[in-house]
Length: 183
Image 1 (cartoon, rainbow, N blue to C red):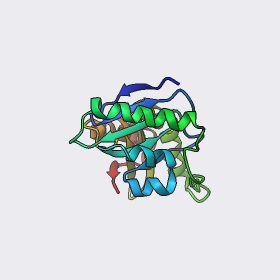
Image 2: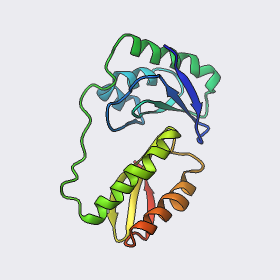
Image 3: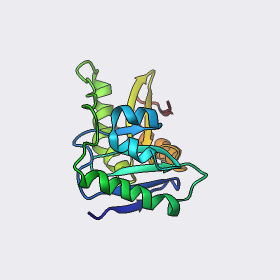
């Protein structure tokens, strides 16, 4: 098994491409080892490597964010080994099915916002090892949560304001602003 790595716009985050499907659908974001232990054996194993601050799974990639105290050249061999061992052993990535978002009650504007995010924004940010998740629309403001390489990325504010906000305003006049939310 050969695992490729790619730099992301966030210098603290590295994208790992194992050459196979990581998640069949959706994404999974882990910001601490305790949450990872409950939801994902692979994420839990990656948090065992000293210096791992966050783990994010996409369809065919894993992004890992390191703490400032560690360097990639020290961490990368252990991370590659953990990913390779996990997949070659045929272990499950997630312990339980991921939650599916219920969109049946969404109004027309929210449906349009989600459609634009899914078709135009998410594929682009996935290429950089991240994801953007819709969290609400109130008084003309769209609330989004940045995950993976996008979380804490120096260019994320520009992406949010210059890219996503301008696009949503263009297609949906009711949108007046986009704001990032964090947890």
